[in-house]
Image 1 (cartoon, rainbow, N blue to C red):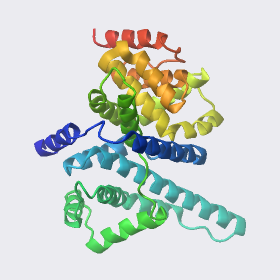
Image 2 (tube, rainbow, N blue to C red):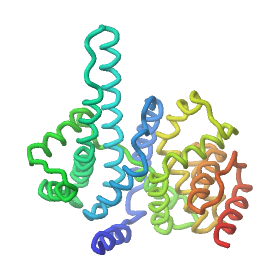
Image 3 (tube, one colour):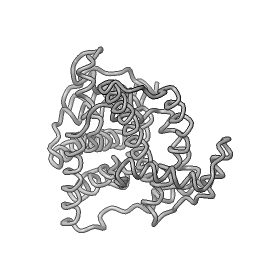
Image 4 (cartoon, helix red, strand yellow):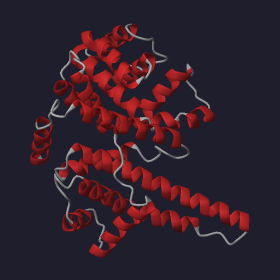
Length: 328
């Protein structure tokens, strides 16, 4: 297991900021913002349901075992998430059609078992597809995938593996080059560097990756904390939870929250300046950035789940006390 760790650390040290022209960065940031707006507007229903801790952990560990860069693991989670949501929507659509037309219902138990039995195969296919998107780094071969599945007791042929990849691609209309929160984090760090942020982007980058892993692994509790803080209520209604789905798909918001929390960990005295820069770049309210970064800090330092958070600079003192108390 030492080789994956060395590979991952090497990929972190090779990352460079400040090597791209400002015009290119501006265009890329605008493109990401437009993508994010469409994702937020289109968020509904079951989106986010499959970013479950055990699934994410499986993808992360598998990506590390196969020496894949971090962007691949996030991409794989997003591909799997959207594929499984599509599967769930298709099942519900079929059930609705059968009820309306009063046709004989399918054996839903058998269909559920079929989805369950193929889940690991689909998950591994999503990782393999994500690796192909970053072909400049490393592609996972069919032999490697089949050997891994066999080690878990799943025996498949190369044809079944190819069919699984094709099922994922067709389900998503071959649109698998999905934006990930990492792209937003790294783009915002690039802009912060050009804006004269006091905390170096390279210094923030590694901490951001750690916190982004944390948010993915603790997706539900982190966003539950944020939801309770935003509505000033410890027990959100079902309607409030459904409306909050759009927040879970807001990667720009997640990006600023990750960077703000990382800045506090790296140099809490510069935290307010970083947050103000992020607000100026994205237009996201200071209070929203503060609440999200505090939710992340709360789960990373082990403090109690917070209620609604005050706007800066008061958040700085609260987070510092939480961090201090967790270390005593």
